[in-house]
Image (cartoon, rainbow, N blue to C red; front, side, top):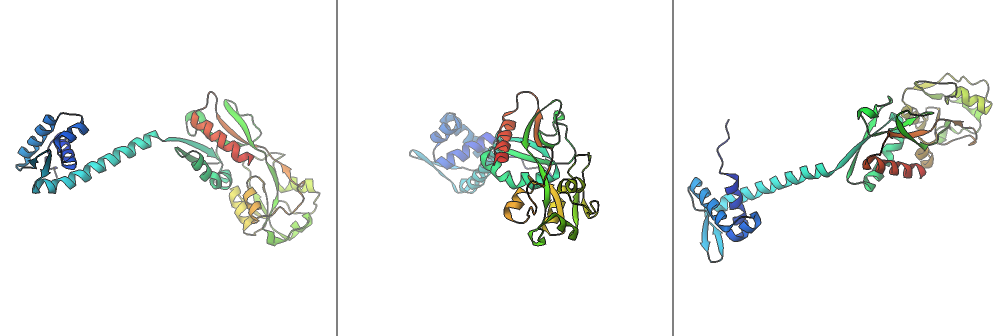
Length: 296
Protein backbone atom coordinates (compact mmCIF):
# COMPACT_ATOMS: atom_id res chain seq x y z
CA UNK A 1 0.00 0.00 0.00
CA UNK A 2 1.48 3.34 -1.08
CA UNK A 3 2.01 6.04 1.53
CA UNK A 4 -0.07 9.22 1.06
CA UNK A 5 1.93 12.13 -0.31
CA UNK A 6 3.07 14.44 2.49
CA UNK A 7 3.85 18.16 2.34
CA UNK A 8 7.54 19.12 1.94
CA UNK A 9 9.62 18.60 5.09
CA UNK A 10 10.83 22.21 4.98
CA UNK A 11 7.27 23.52 5.15
CA UNK A 12 6.42 21.19 8.04
CA UNK A 13 9.54 22.27 9.94
CA UNK A 14 8.70 25.92 9.40
CA UNK A 15 5.14 25.39 10.62
CA UNK A 16 6.23 23.40 13.72
CA UNK A 17 8.76 26.04 14.75
CA UNK A 18 6.39 28.95 14.16
CA UNK A 19 3.59 27.20 16.06
CA UNK A 20 5.85 26.30 18.99
CA UNK A 21 7.39 29.78 19.25
CA UNK A 22 4.24 31.73 18.22
CA UNK A 23 6.44 33.88 16.01
CA UNK A 24 7.67 33.78 12.42
CA UNK A 25 10.74 35.82 13.38
CA UNK A 26 11.78 33.52 16.24
CA UNK A 27 11.16 30.50 14.02
CA UNK A 28 13.39 32.06 11.37
CA UNK A 29 16.15 32.62 13.95
CA UNK A 30 15.96 29.01 15.12
CA UNK A 31 16.08 27.58 11.59
CA UNK A 32 18.72 30.11 10.40
CA UNK A 33 16.54 31.52 7.62
CA UNK A 34 14.71 34.81 7.07
CA UNK A 35 11.17 35.57 8.31
CA UNK A 36 10.21 35.90 4.64
CA UNK A 37 11.34 32.32 4.04
CA UNK A 38 9.21 31.12 6.95
CA UNK A 39 6.18 33.02 5.57
CA UNK A 40 6.77 31.46 2.14
CA UNK A 41 6.92 27.92 3.57
CA UNK A 42 3.78 28.47 5.65
CA UNK A 43 1.95 29.82 2.59
CA UNK A 44 2.96 26.74 0.55
CA UNK A 45 1.69 24.45 3.33
CA UNK A 46 -1.62 26.37 3.58
CA UNK A 47 -2.09 26.12 -0.19
CA UNK A 48 -1.46 22.38 -0.19
CA UNK A 49 -3.77 21.75 2.77
CA UNK A 50 -6.40 24.24 1.63
CA UNK A 51 -6.75 25.80 5.09
CA UNK A 52 -5.42 28.78 7.00
CA UNK A 53 -2.97 27.83 9.74
CA UNK A 54 -2.23 31.12 11.48
CA UNK A 55 -4.06 34.23 12.58
CA UNK A 56 -1.63 37.16 12.28
CA UNK A 57 -1.68 39.25 15.46
CA UNK A 58 0.46 42.10 16.77
CA UNK A 59 3.99 40.75 17.37
CA UNK A 60 2.79 37.16 17.38
CA UNK A 61 0.76 34.60 15.46
CA UNK A 62 -1.98 32.33 16.77
CA UNK A 63 -2.98 28.88 15.59
CA UNK A 64 -6.26 28.30 13.81
CA UNK A 65 -8.39 25.32 14.83
CA UNK A 66 -6.95 23.24 11.95
CA UNK A 67 -3.38 24.15 12.92
CA UNK A 68 -4.06 23.25 16.55
CA UNK A 69 -4.88 19.70 15.40
CA UNK A 70 -1.79 19.46 13.22
CA UNK A 71 0.77 20.94 15.60
CA UNK A 72 0.88 18.23 18.38
CA UNK A 73 1.36 15.49 15.79
CA UNK A 74 4.27 17.31 14.16
CA UNK A 75 5.78 18.29 17.53
CA UNK A 76 5.81 14.67 18.71
CA UNK A 77 7.14 13.49 15.38
CA UNK A 78 10.05 15.93 15.37
CA UNK A 79 10.81 15.07 19.01
CA UNK A 80 10.97 11.38 18.03
CA UNK A 81 13.26 12.23 15.10
CA UNK A 82 15.56 14.20 17.42
CA UNK A 83 15.73 11.38 19.98
CA UNK A 84 16.52 8.79 17.31
CA UNK A 85 19.27 10.94 15.78
CA UNK A 86 20.76 11.65 19.23
CA UNK A 87 20.74 7.94 20.10
CA UNK A 88 22.54 7.05 16.87
CA UNK A 89 25.11 9.78 17.43
CA UNK A 90 25.67 8.61 21.02
CA UNK A 91 26.24 5.04 19.87
CA UNK A 92 28.82 6.24 17.37
CA UNK A 93 30.61 8.14 20.13
CA UNK A 94 30.81 5.00 22.32
CA UNK A 95 33.90 2.86 22.08
CA UNK A 96 33.99 -0.90 22.35
CA UNK A 97 36.48 -3.73 22.66
CA UNK A 98 36.42 -7.50 23.01
CA UNK A 99 38.36 -9.49 25.61
CA UNK A 100 38.69 -13.23 25.12
CA UNK A 101 39.32 -15.66 27.98
CA UNK A 102 38.64 -19.26 28.91
CA UNK A 103 35.18 -20.28 30.06
CA UNK A 104 36.25 -20.71 33.68
CA UNK A 105 38.28 -17.50 33.89
CA UNK A 106 35.42 -15.53 32.35
CA UNK A 107 32.82 -17.02 34.73
CA UNK A 108 34.83 -16.95 37.95
CA UNK A 109 37.17 -13.96 37.60
CA UNK A 110 35.95 -11.54 34.96
CA UNK A 111 32.17 -11.59 35.41
CA UNK A 112 32.24 -10.81 39.18
CA UNK A 113 34.47 -7.79 38.46
CA UNK A 114 32.93 -6.42 35.27
CA UNK A 115 30.73 -3.89 37.11
CA UNK A 116 33.85 -2.07 38.29
CA UNK A 117 35.03 -1.80 34.68
CA UNK A 118 31.75 -0.19 33.68
CA UNK A 119 32.08 2.23 36.58
CA UNK A 120 35.66 3.10 35.62
CA UNK A 121 35.01 3.32 31.86
CA UNK A 122 31.33 4.27 31.35
CA UNK A 123 31.87 5.22 27.68
CA UNK A 124 33.62 1.95 26.85
CA UNK A 125 31.57 -1.16 26.08
CA UNK A 126 33.34 -4.39 27.03
CA UNK A 127 32.42 -7.62 25.24
CA UNK A 128 33.54 -10.84 26.90
CA UNK A 129 34.33 -13.66 24.47
CA UNK A 130 34.43 -16.94 26.43
CA UNK A 131 36.19 -19.83 24.70
CA UNK A 132 38.75 -22.47 25.62
CA UNK A 133 40.17 -22.22 22.09
CA UNK A 134 42.76 -19.45 21.60
CA UNK A 135 41.43 -16.73 19.32
CA UNK A 136 43.34 -15.14 16.44
CA UNK A 137 43.98 -11.60 17.65
CA UNK A 138 45.61 -10.66 14.34
CA UNK A 139 42.34 -11.48 12.57
CA UNK A 140 40.43 -9.13 14.84
CA UNK A 141 38.36 -11.77 16.64
CA UNK A 142 39.23 -9.97 19.88
CA UNK A 143 41.28 -6.95 20.91
CA UNK A 144 43.03 -8.74 23.78
CA UNK A 145 42.97 -12.11 25.51
CA UNK A 146 43.73 -13.78 28.82
CA UNK A 147 45.82 -16.92 28.34
CA UNK A 148 47.02 -19.55 30.79
CA UNK A 149 50.40 -21.04 29.99
CA UNK A 150 54.15 -20.95 30.11
CA UNK A 151 54.56 -18.40 27.32
CA UNK A 152 56.02 -16.80 25.31
CA UNK A 153 53.40 -15.82 22.75
CA UNK A 154 55.10 -14.94 19.44
CA UNK A 155 53.78 -11.86 17.70
CA UNK A 156 51.97 -10.62 20.81
CA UNK A 157 52.76 -8.42 23.78
CA UNK A 158 52.35 -10.60 26.87
CA UNK A 159 52.10 -9.29 30.44
CA UNK A 160 51.96 -11.51 33.51
CA UNK A 161 48.61 -10.87 35.14
CA UNK A 162 48.04 -13.53 37.81
CA UNK A 163 50.33 -16.16 39.31
CA UNK A 164 48.61 -19.48 39.87
CA UNK A 165 48.85 -22.09 42.61
CA UNK A 166 46.61 -25.15 42.77
CA UNK A 167 45.38 -26.73 46.00
CA UNK A 168 42.53 -28.94 47.25
CA UNK A 169 39.39 -26.98 48.12
CA UNK A 170 35.98 -28.14 49.31
CA UNK A 171 32.77 -27.20 51.04
CA UNK A 172 33.57 -26.52 54.73
CA UNK A 173 30.91 -28.96 55.88
CA UNK A 174 33.02 -31.88 54.62
CA UNK A 175 35.22 -31.29 57.65
CA UNK A 176 38.60 -32.25 56.17
CA UNK A 177 41.56 -31.80 58.52
CA UNK A 178 44.38 -33.99 57.15
CA UNK A 179 45.33 -35.09 53.64
CA UNK A 180 44.48 -38.66 54.67
CA UNK A 181 40.85 -37.55 55.04
CA UNK A 182 40.65 -37.42 51.24
CA UNK A 183 40.07 -41.17 51.28
CA UNK A 184 36.58 -40.47 52.69
CA UNK A 185 35.50 -38.21 49.82
CA UNK A 186 35.21 -38.15 46.05
CA UNK A 187 37.92 -36.42 44.08
CA UNK A 188 36.77 -33.84 41.55
CA UNK A 189 38.84 -33.56 38.38
CA UNK A 190 39.03 -30.70 35.90
CA UNK A 191 40.28 -32.22 32.66
CA UNK A 192 43.19 -30.50 30.95
CA UNK A 193 43.10 -30.30 27.17
CA UNK A 194 46.87 -30.68 26.77
CA UNK A 195 48.29 -32.15 29.99
CA UNK A 196 52.04 -32.27 30.61
CA UNK A 197 54.20 -33.82 33.30
CA UNK A 198 53.88 -30.73 35.50
CA UNK A 199 50.12 -30.20 35.01
CA UNK A 200 48.41 -29.72 38.39
CA UNK A 201 46.77 -33.13 38.86
CA UNK A 202 45.78 -35.17 41.88
CA UNK A 203 48.65 -37.55 41.16
CA UNK A 204 51.18 -34.70 41.29
CA UNK A 205 49.57 -33.22 44.38
CA UNK A 206 49.70 -36.55 46.25
CA UNK A 207 53.40 -36.80 45.42
CA UNK A 208 53.93 -33.33 46.89
CA UNK A 209 51.85 -34.03 50.01
CA UNK A 210 53.23 -37.53 50.58
CA UNK A 211 49.78 -39.14 50.40
CA UNK A 212 49.84 -42.84 49.49
CA UNK A 213 47.06 -45.24 48.60
CA UNK A 214 44.65 -42.64 47.16
CA UNK A 215 42.87 -43.60 43.93
CA UNK A 216 43.97 -40.47 42.11
CA UNK A 217 42.11 -41.28 38.87
CA UNK A 218 38.75 -42.03 40.51
CA UNK A 219 35.94 -39.54 41.07
CA UNK A 220 33.93 -37.03 39.05
CA UNK A 221 35.46 -35.46 35.95
CA UNK A 222 34.58 -32.12 34.32
CA UNK A 223 35.65 -30.64 31.00
CA UNK A 224 34.90 -27.13 32.31
CA UNK A 225 36.78 -25.98 35.40
CA UNK A 226 33.91 -23.74 36.49
CA UNK A 227 31.69 -26.84 36.75
CA UNK A 228 34.25 -28.49 39.02
CA UNK A 229 34.17 -25.37 41.17
CA UNK A 230 30.38 -25.51 41.42
CA UNK A 231 30.51 -29.21 42.31
CA UNK A 232 32.98 -28.45 45.10
CA UNK A 233 30.76 -25.65 46.42
CA UNK A 234 27.81 -28.04 46.38
CA UNK A 235 29.78 -30.50 48.54
CA UNK A 236 30.10 -33.26 45.96
CA UNK A 237 33.77 -33.79 46.71
CA UNK A 238 37.21 -32.16 46.86
CA UNK A 239 38.59 -30.35 43.82
CA UNK A 240 42.17 -29.41 42.95
CA UNK A 241 41.72 -25.87 41.69
CA UNK A 242 43.43 -22.60 40.91
CA UNK A 243 43.36 -20.55 44.10
CA UNK A 244 43.11 -17.41 41.96
CA UNK A 245 39.83 -18.55 40.41
CA UNK A 246 38.25 -19.51 43.75
CA UNK A 247 39.61 -16.54 45.72
CA UNK A 248 36.14 -14.99 46.01
CA UNK A 249 34.62 -18.30 47.13
CA UNK A 250 37.36 -18.77 49.75
CA UNK A 251 36.81 -15.22 51.01
CA UNK A 252 33.05 -15.81 51.22
CA UNK A 253 33.51 -19.12 53.06
CA UNK A 254 31.63 -21.20 50.50
CA UNK A 255 34.92 -23.04 49.92
CA UNK A 256 37.86 -23.72 52.23
CA UNK A 257 41.45 -24.75 51.64
CA UNK A 258 41.64 -27.49 54.29
CA UNK A 259 45.36 -28.22 54.22
CA UNK A 260 48.52 -26.22 54.85
CA UNK A 261 49.26 -23.46 52.31
CA UNK A 262 52.54 -25.06 51.35
CA UNK A 263 50.60 -28.09 50.08
CA UNK A 264 49.86 -26.34 46.80
CA UNK A 265 51.20 -26.98 43.33
CA UNK A 266 52.68 -24.22 41.20
CA UNK A 267 50.84 -23.56 37.96
CA UNK A 268 51.48 -21.34 34.97
CA UNK A 269 50.55 -17.65 35.04
CA UNK A 270 47.55 -16.05 33.45
CA UNK A 271 48.82 -13.59 30.84
CA UNK A 272 47.21 -10.58 29.23
CA UNK A 273 48.11 -10.65 25.53
CA UNK A 274 47.41 -8.16 22.76
CA UNK A 275 48.87 -7.32 19.33
CA UNK A 276 52.28 -5.71 19.07
CA UNK A 277 52.62 -2.02 18.34
CA UNK A 278 51.12 0.95 20.11
CA UNK A 279 47.95 -0.34 21.80
CA UNK A 280 44.63 1.36 21.18
CA UNK A 281 43.44 3.66 23.93
CA UNK A 282 40.69 1.13 24.69
CA UNK A 283 43.22 -1.67 25.16
CA UNK A 284 45.35 0.55 27.41
CA UNK A 285 42.29 1.29 29.57
CA UNK A 286 41.49 -2.42 29.76
CA UNK A 287 45.10 -3.30 30.62
CA UNK A 288 45.22 -0.72 33.43
CA UNK A 289 41.94 -2.01 34.87
CA UNK A 290 43.08 -5.64 34.73
CA UNK A 291 46.34 -4.74 36.45
CA UNK A 292 44.47 -2.99 39.24
CA UNK A 293 42.07 -5.90 39.70
CA UNK A 294 44.89 -8.44 39.76
CA UNK A 295 46.82 -6.38 42.30
CA UNK A 296 43.74 -6.13 44.52
